[in-house]
Amino acid sequence: MANYTEKPKKKKTTSRDIALDKLDFYNAPTTKSPQKQDKIKGRPKNVFARFCESAFPQKGDSSTEKIRKIVLLAAIVVFAVTIAILLFQLISIDDGDRITSSTQSLAGVHMGTLDMDDFDDPTVVTPIPGTTTGTSGSEGDSVPVEEETEEINVTPVVNKPLNVNFDALKAENPDTVAWIKITSTYLNEVVVKGEDNDEYLHTGFDGSESVSGTIFAHHKNKMDGTDQNIILFGHNMLNGDRFASVKYYLPNDASREPIAFYKVHPTVMLATPNGGSETYKIFAGVLANTQSQYGEVFKYTNKTKFKSQDDFYNFILEVMDRSWFYTDVDLRYGDQLLTLSTCIWPLGEEIETRWVVFARKVRPGESEYVDTSVATRNYNAKLFDYYYNMIGGQWYGRNWDTSKLIGYKKEDDDIVLS
Image 1 (cartoon, rainbow, N blue to C red):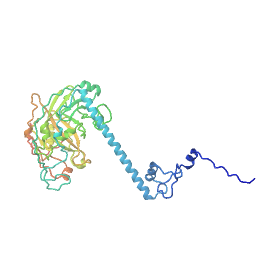
Image 2 (image 1 turned 180 degrees about the vertical axis):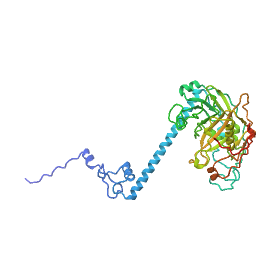
Image 3 (image 1 turned 120 degrees about the vertical axis):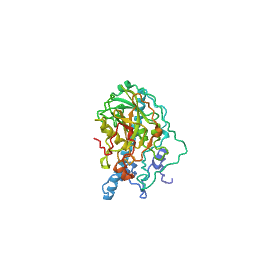
Image 4 (image 1 turned 90 degrees about the vertical axis):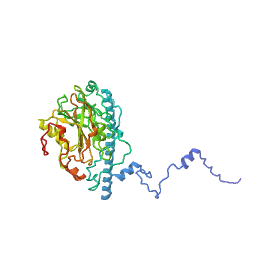
């Protein structure tokens, strides 16, 4: 019998064995891979980890690298804060629109037909002829005037008396004192009065924080019919809210009709809980400096009342000397004035100027009609040092018809407000 050695049997493999032994779930990186590795051997760092390593100073970084990373982090923080502020402002503006619509419904006052699209934004200042046309111009440039082929309609709007539900408004906010409207514009809003002139700068009618704030009366105004000069403040909002419409009274010298907006909207309507609906005729528009380092500060906000007839005359003289347009509206001691003040930046955002429109109440028995055909643009408005340094020009003295100031006879150009 032959001897032989039995061959060992080959071990069978199952599909499970193949799956576990043969499939390559993970390929270890080679030295050719440029990706950095973390503590788990062979695993590439995630995006966040790589960002932190490249953005935050690390041990072993050179001084230059650390400075670069600090600058980068500062830029990221500034960008994030800017975006956050922008989002807050957009949300707040949207809230402002909502509050405006809500108060209009509450008051029972509706917008009506608007024609604001017929007017271009006039806030790029153009100076008197013979001076520069802007901060980038050179002395002696002329004022550019665009050729216009279409006729400009300057027919004045017709007002309808305001019928405001003040009971509903006061139930919502007891600080309600008036409602203001310029027919066929976005200005159709509630007016409040706070304890000071800061309370409603960034507070909505409903008490919420708001970039738009609320139109408010000077805290010294009584709003009971005895005020000699009602001063109202409102933000100049990009979406047209608050006093954005007021800026259009600034003449647009690129047009054949620089004061077309005034000619179409020569009056303002103001309703109060006890005084009913009143109409005011606009007679002046002033660009006022608010910072003494840029020249004279016109203190128009000091005048809610007048000490005497001379005090009234002196104030009107100062206003008319600074007005960018002249009208057919006359004034006399005893007239109640209405002043609308808003922010405007024709000289740059760092120069805090105000555009201020002045009006006086229609007298008992007087027609609301204003002959706007005789209104003219004034190229000799009294301004301030910074304006003249940047734009050019100078004030050549009083040149308006002082007979429009009924009762005034004193011939003195050197009036100083007390």
